[in-house]
Image (cartoon, rainbow, N blue to C red; front, side, top):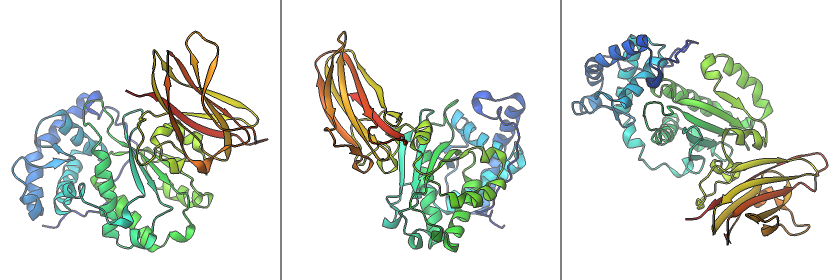
Length: 394
């Protein structure tokens, strides 16, 4: 019998699916879930018929994202509900879609792909930086430094590359009742030129979009387009107009160097330093999301970063995202109005964006607070955005 088409797109309409999650499950939706679950013997049988690779899977051994779907559990319910939501609660369509995904994953050896080593030209463009404040895995992709001919020259290889990244990010999801079920993605377009958009790029993007649409249902969460060139805005709007509203609402376009808007969605500690954040490779001892502050022209801004209940060693990081600032890191002992300067920029020597992250450690002898102070002394009109964090070392 013919195999399901790996690149088939699925319909999506504006339907209320708020009761099609395990923690909010309605009576009607629960019946749909039970119906789909009752069809799992048929689903797995059809997958085995369609694929020799699927036929080799041991009885009861089918998994989707490490979840055994034939076993009754919250995790398998969450996975099945993803397919039901993606097909607007049409059980017949959800059934066929699960079959197609089982065949796709078996034939393409997706579980093995998750552990595969990528060719060098696919490396260094993507970061899975942890989870956001809502618990959603963060996947950041930078397109400006890609060798377009190598990255997009083979559509099959490109699809496998992007699928591997998706698998690695999904591995951070817990598949627990009430836990996040989708990802936060950031696409950085700094350095991208219009000349990069050739037929290979179009074919690769079209192919992976269809694979994700068909075989990764309900994983797309908030997607931020940063440093998005104005010349791409009209084509993107035309493309977005063809998308379902539920998908379109997840897209947010940020302009060039709009760091403050980016940090409203992701703390600077979760953003790579190349994008103006505090995250460096190799990673530092600090793990918190950090703070962002806007400093008006000819103004000063203070950030209360850490309260200490006693003596201890403090690690700190700071940066300016564009242009330059002067700074101080100060400590105010509890009950004292005096400040001790931990670190500062020298008079007339400004911290510049290209300097990246400045970091240090300092030992406090008592309880008190660590504060960052940024001064925007050089600008008459333009603001500065700064990022910082401080943590007590164990």
